[in-house]
Length: 177
Image: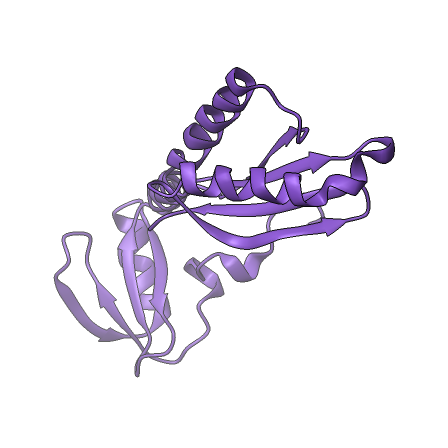
């Protein structure tokens, strides 16, 4: 049977008949040690309790196995992994586009939006686009980007100074630690 849809077995712990060691250290369901025995004897104990024999560490000498409900163990591991993924926040790059001839109110809206992005942990890429002959006024665009950086200096630090890329001038801001 091909395992194309299932996860690779190397991510899962070795259980029951798959344990191939001459001697193993066995731990009971409540955490007490049952001693060192053969996997066959340990498997009999687990089957009497209608549980599984799960290998916790094959690096130890002898390897450590535990008698437990494998389905419940697997569910708990997946639950922990989901919680860890939920808590981590990936930092995105949000882009603000404007023109160097921007009105004051529109500029304030851009500043507020950038501040909101930075406070949520995202980076902000401020872009000024030039159309036609506007490209002659690079100095005005650079002044506007530097003004944006000073207005946001309480929540942001400049990661990349204003630089021109074709018909755009960009600056990258990252949230302060």
